[in-house]
Image (cartoon, rainbow, N blue to C red; front, side, top):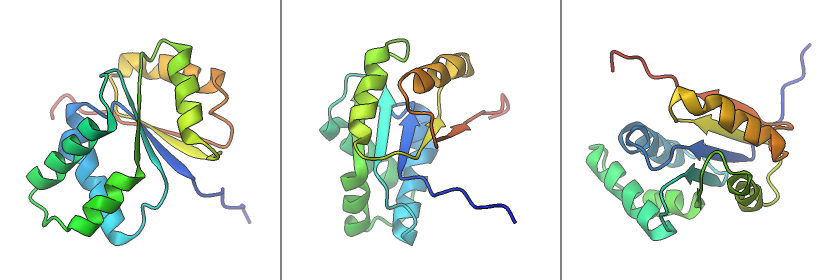
Length: 146
């Protein structure tokens, strides 16, 4: 019998300030919190020099625009899970900041909601920063029809 891998202990979202995150990812995270299945830190990584307040405003706007009934307690819990790392995907310092933001997390899931041209760079930097051991990588590949 195959042993089941340990659950991820953090979710890292590359491309957090983009349109895909606003339209689809934030509402999905909200629904996961609402169902009680998202309980780990969520660390966003993107190039925009946002602070946490700007990120929280973007998430709130996204959830509100999604049309789902907004429960303040659920939204507050989602916002409490969020952290943000601003930086260039080609700069190792961005990944050092990510490592710091992850704290004690050792089994992150890295979700790449970024242009395909950046996949290789980001995956290489994840490995170079020591963030690939026991980690998972999910690649968001959008269809040209969308």
